[in-house]
Image (cartoon, rainbow, N blue to C red; front, side, top):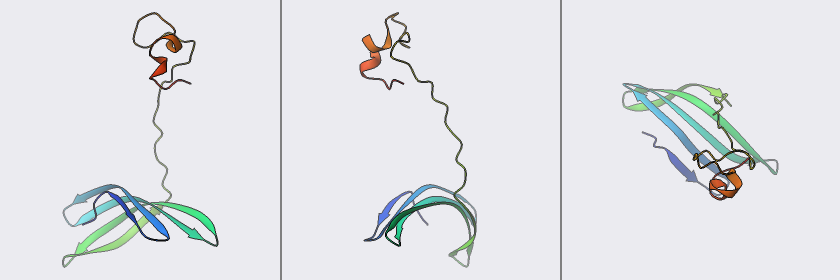
Length: 100
């Protein structure tokens, strides 16, 4: 079966982001980077596979699926530090945390 990670060749890169296997069915989320007509291209896919006589066969795929956005609360330089010190973030933990 396919494992997560990256595989390279001279002209492309395959990144397998997630693999879910349930019995004889699997879903694989991957991104492939390649060149076409001297342009760098990226394609993401969520593909479905099924096992038939020990072989994994491609069933279908959703191209460039929408990935749910993560919500990240950013701390501004002049906001109070989230550590609770009462200092401004830029004078406290702001030197090691991501600031807006």
